[in-house]
Image (cartoon, rainbow, N blue to C red; front, side):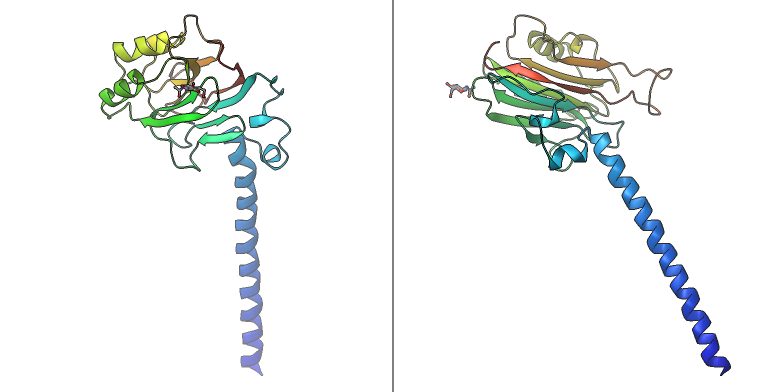
Length: 223
Ligand SMILES: *[C@@H]1O[C@H](CO)[C@@H](O)[C@H](O)[C@H]1NC(C)=O
């Protein structure tokens, strides 16, 4: 009858709408899964079949530690750090934050000693100073910026990072991108550092420069 026909039409339309909703969410989901790993600098292929530690382009020799550090992307995606194939800091581990993210590693054993996240926009710089001053000699120091590493920066902290081999700590400012691996009381400049100034003319994101990735093999207790 007419009612049965109406119900059939309604059911048909409902099915079409449901299918459309499903396809839309499915497509945007697969877009996200393709996109997110690239932002994190860890292509999903390398997670499934790790050919090298931390997914480095080349494997490290026996007496070297593999590492990969990625700074945050704008104020949206937090930074990540991999050391000897272990993700030690990342948004997924929920141990990163705005400012400077720092991991300390025993330069002889490769054992992760401490991790800390320091808000450099509205935090208390004394906390970072205390953290840095307590670092034992020859400890490896891994650093990744997120959002703003510069506002609360002071000369004392700049000097400590410079003494760890940093070339850019002395000019680190508001919303700059910075990734660095150094060591406590390193006498030379570290070869492991990248820096991008926040510059409205060249910024990749509105208000922030491009995220930075740093990877390499650091010699065991050479510093
Ligand atoms: C690093 O490891 C070595 C060897 O186990 C040890 O002698 C040294 O005290 C450690 N250093 C720190 C800072 O933990």
